[in-house]
Each structure stands twice: as structure tokens, then as C-alpha cells.
Image (cartoon, rainbow, N blue to C red; front, side, top):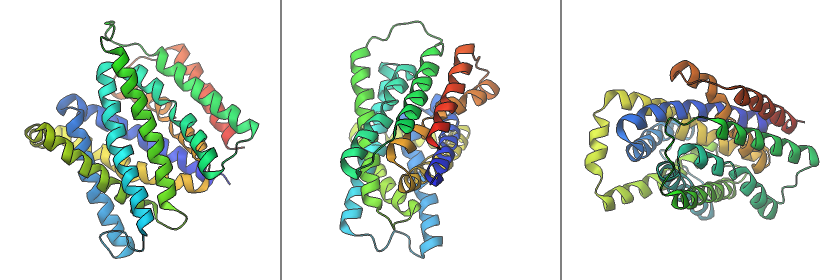
Amino acid sequence: MIIGQLISLGTAFFWTFTAIGFEGAGKRVGSLSVNIIRLVLGMILLTLTVLITTGSFFPVGVGQYGWNMLLISGLVGLMIGDLFLFQAFVDLGARLSLLIYCSVPIMTSVLGYFIFDEIFDYITILGIAITLSAISVVILSRRTKSKKFEKHILKGIIFATIGAIAQSVGLVLSKLGMGETLGAFEATQIRVIAGLFGFILYITLRKKWKEIFSAVKDKVAMKYILVGSIFGPFLGVASSLLAMRYANIGVTTTIAQLNVILIIPFSVLIFKDKVNKIEIIASIFAFIGVALLFI
């Protein structure tokens, strides 16, 4: 019964390493380059995995409905969702953008109720509420280096909200397309195909290929992106889809949000960030909330 929760916990760890890798790369080559390169590397890893496990380069035995749902899911979640989130980072700041992104488990829970008839007991609802509240406190307690008020705050809020909605819809469509038999890596490969196509089209229209090719030449950035790609589009996305097969979508997305908490010790060790008492206390409450989701 707790298989889905355990996989979601693993997903949270994967997202943590992904964030570290992409943060290091993003500071050197920018978020757009990171986005498309991570999907290219993820596609290579996923294709090799699918080839080894099924003997085919692409998923076989997937119906038209499955392909459609997963392709739309990849375009909405992996391309549109991330594109708006990263732009929100610029206009609103990472702290408030991530706070708005905490609404994803709530959105997926509502969608899961109406689409999959997923019902939560009182302990689960309490666990989700405690976890998301604690994570929100951690995000709000972080000190930003710049005290400058964001000029495009309304635009940033709108973009972060669109990103959160896209992420939620993408996850729900993934669960619909994956069904009960399709493997997690195969489903992820289909999603990445759509996300990659979306970014190729976007970069072509924006005439940004020179920027992308320049990023590929940055060996340090590529090492960061490779690490992020292994734990993100490859392991992270696949494990999140697998978790949804065994547990309610609202529960899995809530536990996956723990990467905001798990990244704290790594930020201290790698980026020399300082942690305040509020973050420590809120982190403890976050784990208490997650513990309730295992009951």
C-alpha cells in the first residue's frame, strides 16, 4: 500500500539532485539552454533503456489514446510548464514562484477526485496540509541576496500560476495515458519526445540556436546538465509516473515537493548557504506531514 509513497520519496531525492545540477548549469548558460539540452540527454538515456528492456527504440503496443495523452502531457508539462516557471523566476523571483508551485498537489488532488475518483481520508488531508504549509514556510523564510522589489510581479504571478496548472494537467494526462500496463520509462520517453519537439519549435521561432550551441561547448555546464538529466527527465519523471500507479496523485505530488526541504543540507555544503531556525523547525513539520501520508 505504501509502494507509491516510497517511490515518491525517491522522486523527491531525484528532484533534489536535479535542482543542484541545473542550478549550477543555469548560472553558466541560462535556463533555455539547460531545458533543451536536458531533454536531449534524457531522450538518449530513455531510448537506450527502452531498447534494452523491450528490444525496440520506441514503445510498442501503445494505443492511439495512450500516445495522444502522453504526447499532450509532455508538451503541456515538460515544455509549457517549465517554460512559464523559469520565466516566473525572472519576473517574480524563485522564492515566490516556488511558493505558487506548491499549489500543484492541491490542483492534482482536485483533478484526481473528479477524474480518477480518488478520495482522501482525514489523516491524508491533514498530512498534505501540514507538509505543504511547512514547505511554504521554508520557501518564505529564505533570504534573498537582492532586496529589490520585483517590477513585473503581476506578470510573474500569472506565469507561475500557468506553470503550476500546466504541471498539474500534465501529470493527470500522464496517468491517463500510462494506464495499468505501460512501463514508466516508455511513458516518459513519449512525454520527452513531445517536450523536446516543443522546445525545438520555440527555439527556432526565437532564433536562439546560437545560444544553445554555445552552451554545449561549456564543459562544466554540460557536466552539471548531465547530472541533472540523469536524475530529472530520466529517473525523476519516470519514478513520478510509476508512483502515481500505486498511490493517489495528490499524495505522490505532495511527497515529491519535499525536494525543497531535502536540498537544504546540500545547499549548505555546496553553495555555502545559511539555514535559520525557522527552516529547521518547518522541515521537521514537513517530515511529520509526510509520515502521516504513510499511515
